[in-house]
Image (spheres, rainbow, N blue to C red):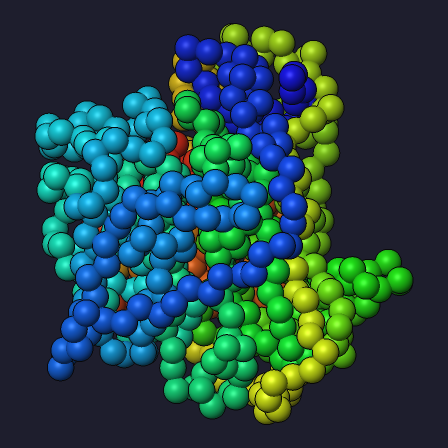
Length: 588
């Protein structure tokens, strides 16, 4: 089978570059990512619901959790043999860690039961796989190592789960490893987040193997809203995977800049269905894919009117806290669909009360790799823009060989269907939850633009030169290159202007802080999307766009990361440090 890729897709994807030219590497590696693995029947198994993890010990000052990382087998589809995964407590996704706002917990993530050999091939050309990739460290780099990051949480540097703070099953630790038990104060807005692996150089592999789970912080404000609760409060972790006939997870043996699975994987099941009553439900959506952006909407499989007779999706929360107002999403809503980039979250209410006996499908309309949506960044890419902004020497040499002969006959796998909702004929108990359009969301605290002490221009782009594999960079540098990095002062407010000069949309994540989007578009002056008017920690920046965010660096001093949350990009050095300081020095 031959795969043909357009010049635009090739530049946007940024395939493997090294001793091979771009064209030859892409035509080889992307075959593995574009062939459909299996013709599995959809919507024949129920959606699994992750369980809430009980603490191992309930202490006076903090509850204590000891969570093991294990290799295990799990059935994901009736027609597939069991699949080998890595997961927390032997499940995919891991158990839900549920905490109360302002109540501290302690967590030990024990990976001693993992094998010494990785589930996938580890490409040692990627930074982080050699001792030379670490400053002042000449120790061993085990093939299997993990560092669990609590995404979206405000924690001390030593408990953040950063890339170089890894630990191996044999007890070997990375150069920035500090402590085994992580302290999580939960002194922040309520949220639905995740915990996932962040080990330098293999984050994409460890996450794809299954090392992720939900992390939830609840608050009293949330209880007062009378949202659907109990069995009507459903977490949905959405991913894409590719499986072999024997049930094995497929991932390319050598590094590729973008990988897309051809199978929807929700809460650890392939194309599941959820039986729902004709009443209101709350859903906590997390996009946990390595790199696929989802553009979600509902279709009605039992409707003769082109499937458009569907319930409205009411979003009331983004990554953190609550939105400014409830945002209706659907054919007659403020937005037509719900766009979620990797590791973005959304909390929504769907009212199925008018759809008894009907079948609804959650669908996806985002292309891969994602390069922007007209109503998101208010701009579009055109074929003539492919080369714009790239240096002349970026396009010289073997990297261009054969590109003129490539056609857009086949690119990456589409993933149109995600899961199904099968609405029953009646309710088991009366629905007393609040009407989503009558929710009085708590006033959110906003960052004060008059208090801004620094505005920083932070760029992302492509670097495509002969014999240089680092294609996606931040501020013109990779993670391992020295030079200046941002040093905001503790308790100060800053604006970061995130400018995307490349050809691929990048979801940018900042550790430690949440932020507000205050502008986007070609010059950063357009209003944020309606469902961005709240606190976030990950924001999608489209090609040719500048997204302006405001935040306060509060709570902890120390060195943290900001990076693209396409995990293949993150592993390929699209990550930079920033350091919250208490002195007078500042580097950028």
